[in-house]
Image 1 (cartoon, rainbow, N blue to C red):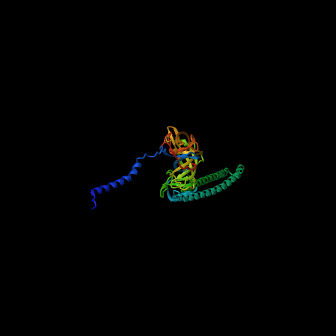
Image 2: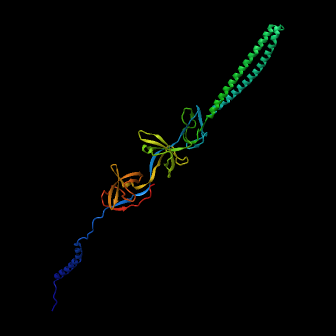
Image 3: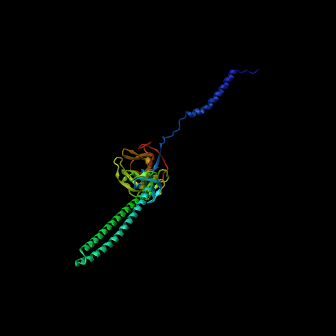
Length: 406
């Protein structure tokens, strides 16, 4: 019996059905899982917030001051003579000079000529004095001789041994001798007066010549030189050199009137100079008793070491002055917010934020002292007010603690 021939369409439908059944069978487990209810995950976790523990440490409060480097005392040096030309410059800006050092020289040709002429005049006066003294000696001898002759003639005339005319001649001779002596003495006085005048004039010329060397009246640092070769100076022409006495440069700083009362003479100051990495240690030398009415700023003069590098008069400088130092409870400055006039810190207790009003003490750039309201060891929100409020539940995340505040 021949085999029964199958219908091709039926066979294809059977194969398609088997494949579909397999696909359905493979997908049933996933469908069943998808239809199962989700597992219970519980309440959402509170938001994380950065916290830090209030700590006990040393805090140092400083005040920044700014100002200009200035010489402690400026000495102006000018010419004491008129009409002389500068022929030599022996010092320049930046030079260290000793007291009496020559800074500049003036032309002295005319002065030297007058000194030579004056010396000749003094010699002539001395010769006149010598001549007058010789005349006096001669006149004194004549007076002595005439007086003696007259003394001898008087008794002879009384006795009639000599006539009256002889006596009169001898009286006249004695009188003439005394007159010549008087004239010689007057001549000596005139010669001496002339000599004194010439000596005085010589001294004036010598003094003028000594002033032709312009010298430093004090030791110090030459700040400026306005003297120029060939310039003709005069006593009223102004300063030729400016000298910082003893080379001392200091910081003249402006300070708020509220800070002045916290400063004292002798306080150390860290002064930062332009172009220098390390600060220079200075001390407060003078606190001005006056405050500018417009700016409400006072002035503090800060002495600096003479041998410090970078001390340039007129340069800008910044000083840091320590005004207070002690131990206290410290928190980051970002942990404090202000609500009106109240300072507030957010403390985390058992995962709940609590608002605390606090009394602040010293403050630095990044740290605040808490005098009252928070104790050491309590956990505070590191950046208060920005993300959480009083009563919020949080998950605290501790930040690393830093060392003591300096």
